Each structure stands twice: as structure tokens, then as C-alpha cells.
Image (cartoon, rainbow, N blue to C red):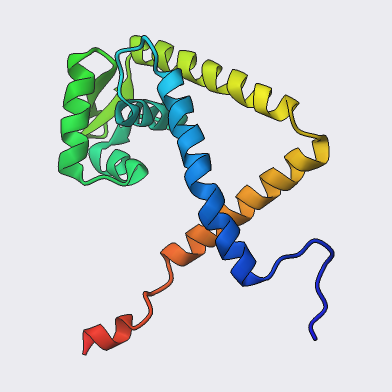
Length: 165
């Protein structure tokens, strides 16, 4: 019989717990996102684009599309709306005038600052309700989850080679 770490769970229990917990976590996160955007006249996808632009230098439409996991045409429509509401600017790349880069406007930066401040406050509240070792285990678990998702993204689908024949 294989030895297990104290508190370790088998794969079937893991799957059952994840299937139970993830919908509840997603519901909480959706409600938090709604709360973050109250009074800002900005949708969640728009805020996602603003936050992506806040983390990086001005991005091309293709780079922003990749960051948002959207098609370039969907990203262009999203950016069009953000330009109309004065949240982002389009600029020609000084190195290649054919390339257009998207950057936050000062108003867009202010909006991101408000949302990130609200988000920080909420996570401070959550963290204050957890013991330090719980916070550490949660962060380690989330880092492991992100690592596995990144690995699986690059893994071929089962039976994928058979489709090529």
C-alpha cells in the first residue's frame, strides 16, 4: 500500500472536492468583480483589457488579444468601445508606422487604480480571516494549479495524433 502524507487525499476525493468548490469560488469571484465595477460604467471584459494594459507597455492588437484570450476582431471591437469612452488611446508605433499600439489614457489608469484598490481591500479582508499557514497553503496551491494549467495548455489532446492521419 502506497504511503500518503498526513491529510493527503486520493484522486477521486480530489476530483469530487474540486467539482464542489470551484463553482462556489467562481460565484464569489463573479460577485466580487461586480462589486469592483459598481458605479464605474465599465464591463468586466473592458476592465480585463484595462488591467492587461496597465501591466504592460503599450500593446499591439495581437498582443492584447493574446493577453485576453480573444480573437483580434473581438479585441478590436472591445478597444473601439474603450477608445469611444476615453479609457484607452491608439498610437502609431514610432519604429513602424504600420503598427498600432494601445495604451491606457489617464482616465483609464484612474479607473484601473480604483478597481485594483477595491480588489486589494477585499483580499486584505479575506486574508485577515485566515491563519498565516492557511494563506501560505492557499497561495502554494494556486501556484501549483496555474503551473499545471500552463503545462496542460501545451500538452496535445489525447488521441490528437490519430486525427492527423
